[in-house]
Length: 217
Image 1 (cartoon, rainbow, N blue to C red):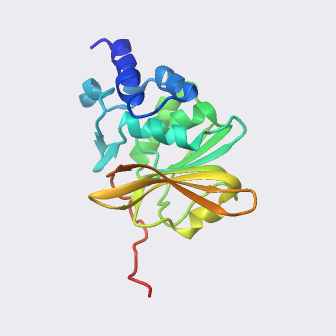
Image 2 (cartoon, rainbow, N blue to C red; image 1 turned 60 degrees about the horizontal axis):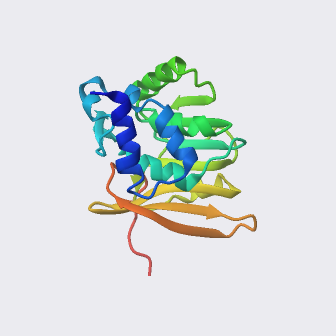
């Protein structure tokens, strides 16, 4: 496989086609080596628009999903980011290339350790990793400019709204299979919330995510 040609094809044939036109995001995908974060047995799928198993019944998001998330949250150089679900570490690396600092947490120590090794090799030093169960809430600082939750949730827990700064953006995938909605939540400077559906997808639930307790009339 010609890696650079495959990378170019991913950008031109997948990302462009799915409406990812932000030059900053496209440059990220050109420069951050996705193949480094894919398990060795799936290297030939590193640039395919498909979910890739990474162990513990977890999957990498597809390149188009990753790119559309990055385009939606529009991370700025002065911003602090919280990522719930480190996974392969690829999304973490993308966020870190744009943000001032990224805090990322995963329930599996194996993922955290593997991601740290990759960040060291890429000289990414603005990421703090932790191994913990973040489904009920987790943070290293009081508030964040951007929050990205990579596992799906039945609904958005209020906790995550509380740790988002005014003017911040929060990405979450909500619902249940076979129909989930990737949502962007924004809180303006007055504290009012806006919601925007970005795309439809189906991804693994965030482990130990809070469940709906029933209908409220």
